[in-house]
Length: 117
Image 1 (cartoon, rainbow, N blue to C red):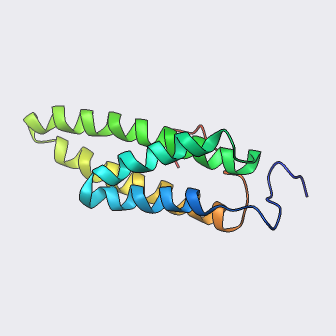
Image 2 (image 1 turned 90 degrees about the vertical axis):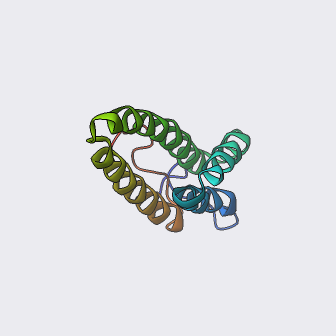
């Protein structure tokens, strides 16, 4: 196996897991997502390459989520924003589950720069 996509057995992925959890908790609290992105920014430079892909994915998810929220807020004035909010929630949950799955397998995220899933 290629070392850039699979982790050595002793590599800790606990902080990346925490970020995924904080993002999901952010659906209820909001502030935990901000804490999660700060953790991702702080840990990405020291992480091995495979784990760095998860941090990149998490950081991009945060900023794309901010864009989703902005659009949903603006469109709420014409009532279609509710559908955008729902689409954002589904998008976020799918991204977090797929990221968690790759992280649990100790593999690099397959597409950390994607806008979709």
